[in-house]
Length: 291
Ligand SMILES: N[C@@H](CCC[C@H](N)C(=O)O)C(=O)O
Image 1 (spheres, rainbow, N blue to C red):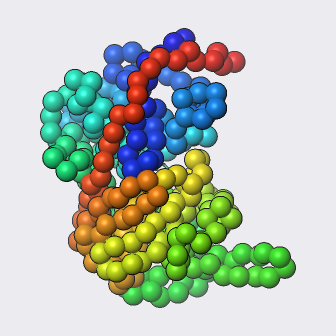
Image 2 (spheres, helix red, strand yellow; image 1 turned 90 degrees about the vertical axis):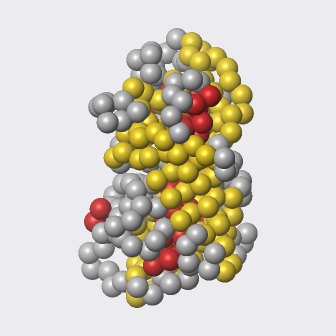
């Protein structure tokens, strides 16, 4: 089967975007992995599918797959690209779109500064992250807490203190002095695959510059380190605000660009993310047959 695709990026987090509004084909995990493959396919951190709305109060369904082929709940940078895609393809001319994700509905707003996404409320209950905190003693940090993860390296035991929350998808946030020297390639998979995260997790490395500016690297579940992670930026800012280090709005510098995150600090309020969304190229590709 040959399909049309659009390659997009938001702050360097890159996507293959597929229009499945009129054509109801579905892809196997092998086909997703092929599309995301940087040598044999198009290359992307995530594959995004635009599908018809499942109910009249929504505009579309937004389906997200990681490069490893697994379907996931949420993708912030992808949401901005989704909004740009439906506008550019003439699928909708609305400035405000309500789309269904696996984590629930989110609202996308197209404006002059880029796309702003209402990412919904952060979820603080560890069990809902999901994170198994049984038997652990949290360490108080501001109005919040971090959790100790034991790490055995070269015979020595070290403790990493991570903030845990969900932005619809799981996040662990570790404060570091300098993101450039943080051992992301080593600690990212350790935190991401830690047995206390039964669905694995995205691992953020947060360097605070001042109350309104941070630097961030994220080792993403199912994709490895990416140039930016939208939900990771939201989670890091929420964690920083609750620990008392940050004040909204916060500019998040990633390796691929800048994102602006706003959150009132109240658990009942949504997190808002603004940033770029760009089309890189379009094409058609023959999919491999799957068994
Ligand atoms: N790049 C994303 C997040 C994509 C999903 C994530 N890897 C997960 O498995 O939860 C973003 O911009 O938020």
